[in-house]
Structures are given as structure tokens and as C-alpha cells.
Length: 515
Image 1 (cartoon, rainbow, N blue to C red):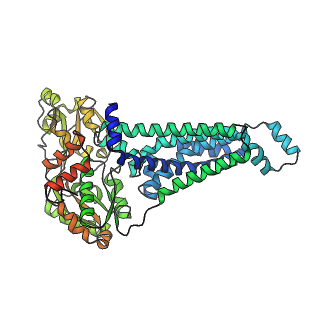
Image 2 (cartoon, one colour):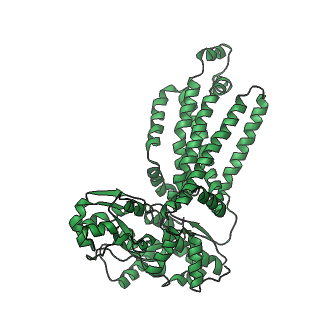
């Protein structure tokens, strides 16, 4: 394990280093915002004690909101990406700094304050010259706790398409790459430890009486300038005349297809491509973001668009459905479907070979008779879809004794470990190549077709018309078996999705060997 980690850090340093820098930047901006607001609020409630129960109660309540829920609340307002992540992290960081500021000021000896008043000091002078200096050790302690917590929590930001080391963690989980997940998690832990250590050194320096007040102020000013400059660099974007943004869902095959599109666009045009992989919530977050203009292109599925986006309940034949899909997307959302890749990644139900043999399971009708004895597992959004769990259970007469929410990258492990008995699978899953996994026959013909294709903003296509001739090169190029094989290379053989995408394009004559 250690050797594999060392090799991963060495071979994927070009992937991890930018994530480390972005993780620090996101964290630092949130810390700066929370520190300014937190100390100000802490001083206010310390000077106006009647307000403290209300304000501390509100901040404590915000602190109890689950982080994923907080991010979900922010998406409709601030959109996908770093902005929402910074706001959420700032909110969570407020409580420790407000409490430490309030507690530190309240802990100042009353005799000292009375003496200052007796000498004619004003309220502002007492605050600046006595209360804050004496409360500084307590405030700094709260600041240290806030910093460590924020760096650790910043990993969740990748769920909404923000950067940082959460990208490595979340992508590792999605592609079943344990080494990538551990490498990202370990990097977060090391960053938090180093910041805690450095703040400790700074704390000792400030409290050392051998250093003059001017020296301490100079050091503080320099540190603030460095932190502000470093954090501000997150918002610096080099001027590029031609640039587009591709998004993908948290699925291995979408990572691969995203890389294919990026490679083709940058090979055949002078357009630079930025990519956000694994946006949590999939269509539910990407669709509003692309309509808003946060993204330009993403891979989507016909069935998802028809049922989840358009809320259509009727099901015409595939040719009619696609024509109506194209028409409604253009009219309602100013989005264009540029064609389909050729594979149908529909849902399926998978069990272990051992379970299939024990209960003689071959099809959904067999499963229905024993479902009351089994546990069902699926990713979160399947339970909320109109064509998801409830509709599936009703149509197939399933009565599972228990359902479990599982991340898309963990469900096969849960199945093989016996934590669940049956799971929802995608028919192009690489894990289905495992001989110990059995995909049951949909003899009830419940699941609809989900053909994958490219969705692009009309505005983007008008601005860069050359994109159309490039992206349609992927149409009808990939079948189910090929997609499953590529997924397996990433998930089981631990190949880089970019390399897998590149090899496929070269093999099919869409990219030159040297590219």
C-alpha cells in the first residue's frame, strides 16, 4: 500500500499539485472571510451582551446543517463551483471564531477594565488596547481550530464541481481507485496538520516578550499580505480568447467521454478546454448550471433528459423520442443535442453469482418472489427519480426488506461484501465483467433506453461553430461492450481515464499517435 501511494504521488504529481494549491486557496479565502466577519460579530455581541444568545443561537443552528445540504441550498443562488464552496465553508467557520472572540473578551479581568475606565480611557481605547490584546490567545486558539476544520471540510466542495483535493477523493471513490482516494485524503490531513503546526509557531512568536511590538506587527502584516495575494490568485484567469467548459457526471464513462471531447477539441481547434469532472447530483446540478452558462458542454442520456428534465411520462419509439428531445431542448433551454455515441447505458439489477445460484435467480420475475428476504442498494438519486425505485418496485412486484443509499463507486464493493444483496447497475459498468457478478434479465422490460450523447449550449455553438464538426466525430463510435471495456480499464486495471480515452481515439483513427 505504501509503495503504491509513493508511486501514485510520483506519477500523478501533475494531477495532485494543482489540486493541493486550489484546496489551500479555497480554504484560505473562506478563513479570511470567516475571520473578518467572525471577529467583528464576536466583538459586537461581547459589547452588546443582550444580543449574544440570539446571534450565537443562529450561528450554532447554521453549524448543524449537513454540509451537503448547505451546498445544495446554495446552488440555485450562487451556482456550481468555487463560489458556493467558499460561501459554505465561511458559514461553517464562523462559529469557532465568533465563540473564541466572545469568550476571550468576556474573560478579561474586570479589575483591569475598571482601572482603565478610572484613568479616563474611552470605550474604543479599552477595546483596542486592553480587551483585544488580552483576548488574543483565546481568539488565536479558535482561529487554529477553525483553520484545521475548514481545510478538512473543503474536501466536500468537489461535490458541486469546485476544486481542491476533494476531486481526487471523490474521483477515487467513483472509479473504485482506493489508492487515489487514500492519496487525496492523506494530502488533506497533511495540509491540516502543517497549518496547525505553523499557526502554533506563529502563536509562540507573538507571545514571546523578547520581540518588540513593532516586530510583531511587521510579521503579522507580511503574513496577511502573503495570504491575501495567494488567495486572490484563485480568481486570476489568464486571458484566453477561446475557452469552453465541459462538465461530467460522477461516472467513470463520463470521465472517459469528457476526456475524448477535450482531446478532440484541443487537437482540431484552437479552443482551450476546462473540465469539471464528477459534479455531484449529476443532471440535477449540471442541467441548471449549463442553462445558466456555468458549463458549455456535457454528456447526457436520452432517458434521463426525457423523464427527469422534461418530465415526460409517455414513451414514443426511440427515433420519435430523440427528435422531440432535440426540439424541446432547443425551445425550452437553448441547448442542442449533437448526436448519440452509439451505446445504450440503461439500468439493470445485479446480484452475486452465489446469491443467484442460491435462489435460482435469472430474471426480475425470479427476484420478485424472494425480494422480501433481500436488501436493495442504489445511489441516492435513483430513489428520487420518477422512473426510479418506487416505480421499479411497483412494476416488478418487488418488496425488499430494506433499502440502502450507496455512492456510485461503492455499490459493487457493498454487494460483494454482503452488505446489500442486490444493486442497481448500469449496463456498461466495468464491474459487470467480474464473473462473480450476475446481471439479471429484465423480463418485464421495465427499464427504458438511455442512449448517451452530447449536449451543448446554442450560444456556445454560435460562438464556436467549428465545435459541431469536431464533436459529431464521436457519434455512433462506441457500443456497449467497448464502453464497458473502457470502464473496466479505469476501475479495475487502474488506468488513467485520459490514457484510455486517448487510446480509443487513436485506435479509431480520430487522433494521431503523437497527440
